[in-house]
Length: 170
Figure (cartoon, rainbow, N blue to C red):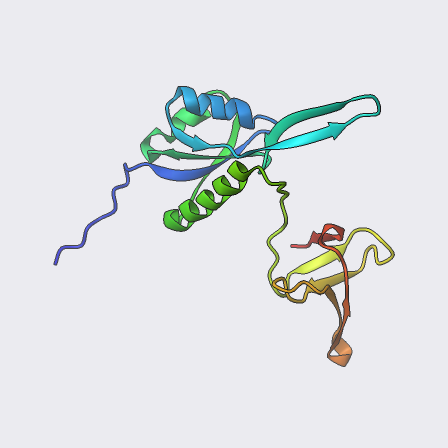
């Protein structure tokens, strides 16, 4: 039985990392070039002391998703709006996740980005009375807090901390 080789000229999805505040301009370039793309935009309200402004902003600041043939990838760099294009290795999983994002955006519900935390991810508390304390995520599926380790005792102290008070350490 002959093995079929993948078609390297077929369009593939890329995550395009744009220069700061260039997502909408880059999306317009992709539209002109007739490349399939998606820039998820959400409504945002900004309150100033004397007025309120409503505008749309990217759900993922700095990123636009596009499907292009790898042989035509150089066309997306023509206006100096792009930092890099990252190839998506698992196209099927990406398309499922992209469909979920499209559903969320179309529903118009309030959506904010959250870091994807895994058990054992090292974090630093960045506000409140525990500012500066380093610990690890205990259970992201049932977030009860951060575990601060005492290795010498083989023990950990579980401290409840809201997600917005954490910074992921690499």
